[in-house]
Length: 169
Image (tube, rainbow, N blue to C red; front, side):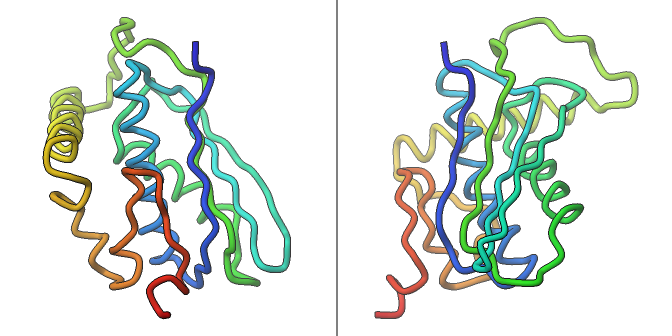
């Protein structure tokens, strides 16, 4: 049985928007693999290395297990914002989903959560997975991916992520 799902790549990122876009792509890849194999995670972990070779990992335990892209990327970005102060550009970024449980395991509903919204997000993610399976990764994209022309070409679906220099000769 799988113990975790990780996606990490090398980049050159200089601001929060770049990190947000990359984390969306990484979280989509991690969440899609969780759904494909029938798992949810109870822990989200990030790994960050800057070009000064400072690196760290931080994790957060979630209230409920999830395989929803939005919940994973939100947790990952909050961990990044809480722990990185932009002394150097980022050269490597990763997201790991850990403490996996089967996706059909019963869970206690969150008294303060919106279960209906969560179910809609799960259905949306599964629909995106199916569209990408049938028509390719770029057949459907999140709007955030188009905030940067270079990073919008990122294909985390096939686990091929090209360095910045690939697009600039």
